[in-house]
Amino acid sequence: MKAFVMKSGSFVVAILVAGVAGSLFSTQFVLAGLTGLGVDVSIGNRLSMSVTDLRILETLAPAVAAALLPAFVVAAICVRWIGGSRTIWFTVAGASAIVVELLVIGSVLGLMPVAGARSTMGLLGQGLAGALGGFTYASMTAGGQAGEAA
Image 1: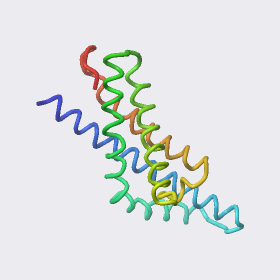
Image 2: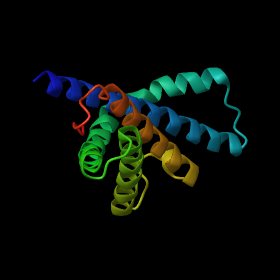
Image 3: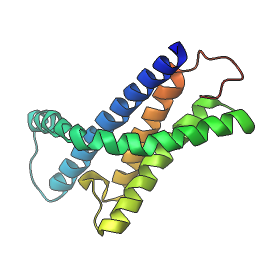
């Protein structure tokens, strides 16, 4: 039971890390686009908009959780049956889960659901957010036994 609680708590933290990072990256990519159009965006405005945009976590966090859960299950299976670094498996799983989710939703809707991910660099930023979530989960659950995958 203790292991389940620890893994569940670590998963929630990973969702929050990926969600907050994804929100911040999205905001900054959108603002960079505005700056590219000649709009002057002060540091104060960047900070204010970044904090305000964290409200997206209300909808972003469940989407991040839906992407990370199966990705982490696959990563755990890979650690157990293939071996290698847990940190690498979960980091790559987090990155690829978010990118795949955004590409699939974008394909279905015909529009990228996260404004800051509409460019290649923005999409890579979202992948980095997922990677941070995966890295966080792997780090927080690293104390398990050697044979324990997740």
